Amino acid sequence: MRAVFQQELQEVQERLVEIAELVEQSIDKATRAFNESNVALAEEVIEDDSKIDALTVSLDELAIDILARQQPVARDLRIVVSALRVSSSLERMGDMSEHIAQLARYRFPEKVVPKSLRGTFLDMGALDVAIAKKLTELLRTQDPNLAQEIRNDDDKVDELHLSVFDKVLGERWKGDTEETVDATLASRYHERFADHAVSIAKKVFYLATGDWAGSDD
Amino acid sequence: MRAVFQQELQEVQERLVEIAELVEQSIDKATRAFNESNVALAEEVIEDDSKIDALTVSLDELAIDILARQQPVARDLRIVVSALRVSSSLERMGDMSEHIAQLARYRFPEKVVPKSLRGTFLDMGALDVAIAKKLTELLRTQDPNLAQEIRNDDDKVDELHLSVFDKVLGERWKGDTEETVDATLASRYHERFADHAVSIAKKVFYLATGDWAGSDD
Image (cartoon, rainbow over all chains, first blue to last red; front, side, top):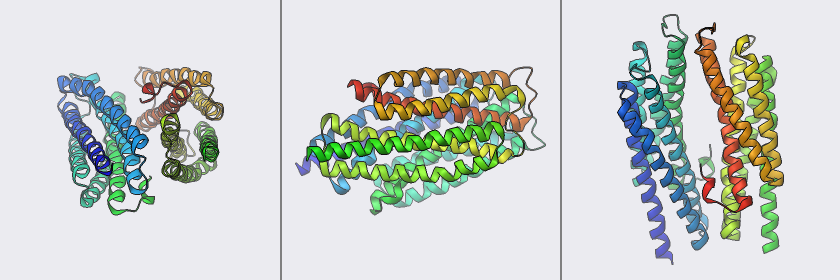
């Protein structure tokens, strides 16, 4: 029974990694679609999001099934409950990619943001992609250093997010209303993407180090 | 054992209702703070959010403790897992109230939105408050009609959310960049608040009617 349970936990972990890989691809494509006004890529992201949604629903069903059959306690129980939460955050990360891709599609063939913000969004996008890669690796290895790296990267995303508002509200901003709305939403989506990764990283970190109480945020 | 379990489920439900009541108060205060530029009220909302956060963490601990001790299966298990998800959505609703209150505080003594949008935000705020009240009642009574009403109200919130963009992007919009940014974020927060309520309503509806598969969104 115990061996079966370990095998099942293994499967949960593998499926989380699989979903994280899809999220990684989706944010990579979404930020490229956004920065390069690539509408075909944007549409791929939007289509792929339903795949992420379906995989998280099916993972949740597996986790609930494990709870019912294996009746885990203590740390094992927390691992399974954690998997449900990680899956929910991954699903939201997929949604953020989709929102970014949608902005690219709406504005096509125009670029979403004016020149003065392109460097900032390139950096923010690159950080989101780096965070997603580290998250996949963290879910694969449970290396606590990666959790810390994700937090550091998130701090950088937060700084860039604030700098978008500084620019938009600054005297030199030449963008029209549409560009202001788009920049505001796009920046928020990039920032939320990273927030969800931090939330997952905290859960994995505290599971790895045994301190559960800090894992809710 | 069974009686104890039922009592514990009862406690979970009561605590969810208690948190929902706080969320209801917080969105009521936040939307008033927002519409009336009441900074004292805004600060109350911001302070109260940590109470909501603490209560959700403690509810999650109770739910996990019940899973460990009672090892529920089938529908009972799904009720407890559902409680964890409902709690997470309530926590996010509290965050949305807080974000709305923060906008009011930042812009004080100015109003957050210009005259042309005040009616829209009054309506959107009133709908969010109505949704929060219905949600508390739904968690108390599991009345499926309330779940449907919440979905209908959410459709109205979505329409108002789109109408904000129509106005902001319309030719008659006279707002400056700051007002454009604020209207964009405020509208998004109001809309997300209602989305989380719908997500909870779906879970409660499907628990009440027995069809779990549709409860993930």
